[in-house]
Image 1: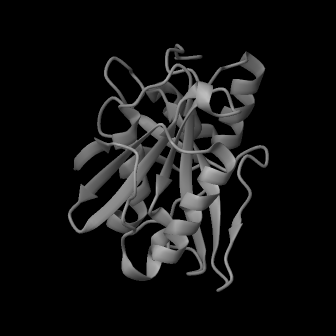
Image 2: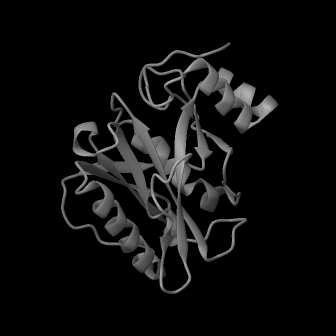
Length: 203
């Protein structure tokens, strides 16, 4: 995977027919959070995806936000072709190295030919950023209307799915008991899942 953090400026949209939806996603992000503080472009084989970042002090959510641009340019395996998705992740303190794993997640369905939806997990093949023991990303429907679905005139709509880093023990618990049980366990324990410095809540 080739990646580079770029200076803020114009980015050429990719994937031909996906230009309209890609630009609509970009416009929605800017309407909600303003101009990103950083962005990265990742190239994997013939695929291209961007990650935008908004620093914690530059958006109303109080966390560093990382969001994909380009996932919705293609239909997702296992979904109606008009149903597209993008992914976002919030961390505080920030960890910019997570961008690579988030980009890989964004390309996972297309490259592997599998569907991704609420409760699904994708291994990163290594630490999500240097120094962490978290090596898996879990996909969730946001519990609140964090970002409204994007409706386009041609019938396409884009849902925005939240991504949460997992420890191996959390992945094992989720595999045995399900995503909802893990979320309940987090709520009971008051787990700050947005904190990259948190410790495993259970072994």
